Each structure stands twice: as C-alpha cells, then as structure tokens.
Image 1 (cartoon, rainbow, N blue to C red):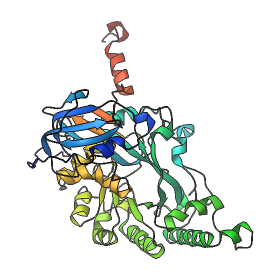
Image 2 (image 1 turned 90 degrees about the horizontal axis):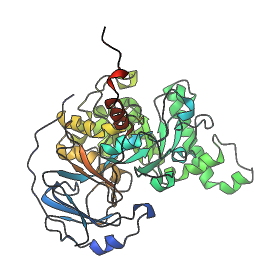
Image 3 (image 1 turned 180 degrees about the horizontal axis):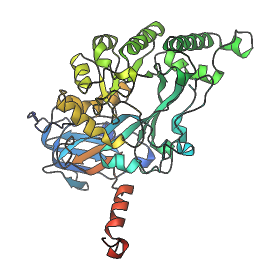
Image 4 (image 1 turned 135 degrees about the vertical axis):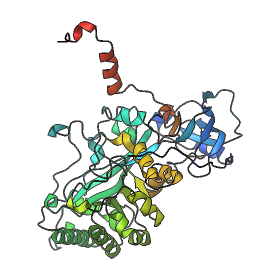
Length: 441
C-alpha cells in the first residue's frame, strides 16, 4: 500500500461573504446550536474551490457563514488557531453498517439485514435500528469522518439507506439528516436472493419493478382486491415508487463487469437513477458508466479478488474511472463488506487512490463533495462554503498521510473530542502495576 506524499501547489483565493446573513439565519437542528467559532491561519481546502493559504472558516450556530483569506472575525468568536494545519470539510463514508452491528458473530447485534418477503425488503429502514452509542462511532469521527451512509444488506432489495451525522447523541433521529437516501439492492448473489442463477435474479428484479409500476398506476384496484396478484407486499411496492419516479436512487451492489452492464440496462429500461456499489471491475466498463452518468462507490485498499465476480480487481480502479469521467465515491472498506469496523479507514483509502494515479484533489472530492452531490446534499455538505453545515476538520498535515491526525473535529458546529474505546484500553493497560505481568522464565 502506498500513500502519496508530494502535493502540487495550489492557488489561494478568498470567498465572498455574500451569503453570510442568509446562512446565519438558516434553520439547523436544535442539537447543533453552538457558539461562533473562527478557525484561523490554516491552509483551507474548500473542495468547491481552490485552496486558501492563511484562511479563515467562520462558523455560527452550526453553519458555515464565511470562508476566505480576509474574513472579519467577530470579537465574541472562539478562535481556533490552525496555523501550520490543514482544514477540510468533514469526510463522508458512503458505504457503512455503522451503528447497525457491534459484533459480527453475534446475531443479536446485527441490525442491517431484514428477512423481507422472497428477498424483498424495500420498506425496511435500517436507520430505525441504529445504535447512536455504538463504540465504533468515536473512532470513525476521530479520523475525520463526520457523516456516513448507513446501508442495509441482504436479499435482493435490502431496504433504505440513510445519511447520518456522527454527533454525540442519544437518539438516531438527532443524527439522521436524510432517510430514505437510497434504495439498496444487489444483482450478483443469486443465492442470497433465493434465486438459482444470475439470469433468474435479474428476471425477478424486473418482475418486481414491473409490479411496482402496476401498483403505482392501480392503487385503488389493488386496495379493492380487484387487481392481479403482485410479487411484493403493499409496503414494499409503495416504498419503490420514489425509485420508479427517479426521486430516489437505486444503489446496486455489483462487481462483475457484465453485471454492471445488466444493471445499466435495467435502470435505462425503467427510468431508474442508478448508483453502483463495489464495482471491482467497473474500470472495464468505465465508458458505459460515464455515458449513463452512473456514480460508483468503490475502495482503493483491495487488489486481491474477494470473489469470482471480482477477478478483475485492480487498485487503480478509482483513477481509471475518474479518467473516463465517472463520478467516484471512495469508501473506507475497500468496496467490499460495508462493516462498521473499517469506517475510519476512509482517508487511507483516498490516499491509496492517489498513490495509484488519482489526483489529490479528486481523491479529497471523492470523500467529501462527490458523495454529498451524488446523494442530493451538495448544497449543505461536502464543501467549506457559506450556508453549509459546519462539519469541519483541522488536521496536523496532509489527511492522507499515516502520521497525520485530526486535531479538531466539528460536527454541526460543535467540536467533539470523545475518548475512544481503544484509547481507554491503551490508558488502562499503560497504568497496570509491574506485578500484573508474569515474571520472565
């Protein structure tokens, strides 16, 4: 694994304060109310524009109200000196089970997979089972991840994903930004969906979408019991309506190039807004993905195939996709199982993507603004700009370097410095008396 260490110089700029008043007055969740904060003197990477040397990020009541090189700092603002530091938007991991699993081997701690009906659980909201006190939240946030997509898995249609801010909260509702965010499905594991072959799995998906369309056009007949039988429950068919209307993306987990092509054809036939998750062989069909404007959620830490569907895996996948014009959302799990445990690896995956040919700016965008825009939240998330939600990280250096750490992490304008479970254990065993250890033989 390589991490790029050299960076090209960037021109600095100042951002207008034109939206200052509107941003200050914009409503934000009650949990994010905070004081005025000025992060000053750092090298600011807005993502939506060039880097700013000796920049200032001004935060008020959970929102960014100004970003630039000559921003007036109110007298009552709390100052955070970022001299010699790097300042970026909070990172967004687009593929996780964070808060939905604590111990993978213990079924009662796994809340990301619904039983559904014949492999269909479209009405299932995974976020309803999210544990806001999961011990994996703090480590992710400590490494600069301030927002995640919490996604279900299993079956053919797994259910609805949600966009979540990593607040210190007692309620999943307080953390949730948007739900549903996407409808999650898969088109490569026939057995998981109760089918015998890929062709049958694709046939069942087409049948489901066709029946959802029939339901949407004939609700009255369905409720009166005068329509033909349909392959899914009423709640699942209803949940699929925003997908057919193009309002809710269909996030399909698939790796093999031919399966990606099948998903593109399916989306084209039904007018569905498609997103690909995994995409190990996406580089092989990059041109088709770019033409269809299909974003790809993929990692950069895995170069060994994890299945027969990913024999074409290569670590420059993300770079090749971007070169072809595909929107890339880098995930922190290598594009494989979106566990809760590897969420914090996001910045290392981005650094590895740079080492394998992706530009530094593109890699930062792939873990900030690109996912925000792909999920329809680009006006509030993923960039340091007036009016945006104040998810901001101050780094000791290049965030893609192993030796760099997040010195200040702000979520909705509140700085959070919660001790992680790992740190608690480290401190505990560091203080053990010598008598605790057995004598040498």
